[in-house]
Image (cartoon, rainbow, N blue to C red; front, side, top):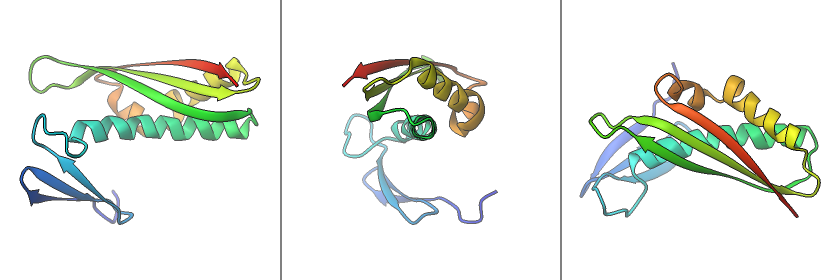
Length: 138
């Protein structure tokens, strides 16, 4: 267990303020439909996407692939009944560069999904996680 906790504090008007162990603060909007700040589940899925993105881009750099831009697009499906857990998470990795090897991209995604990304490993028992990729030639 980590020594420094994440602190979530109510800050009024259906906002929460999250302070991370690294000292950063994030405002969270829990009022449905207002969208004045990210919602809790947006942050949850953003964290998952960031976890796998960090792995994939790191692996591609180590493989010396000529990546000039990279992003992950995420789409989710949730149960209709409560708790509205995620049942499907689709991660599309979009890699831009000149001569990027598709085999390297696939291997990086597989390593992240199967070995390195703790967030994907955490949701996998309850949600189908599907990854795909697209290489955009520069």
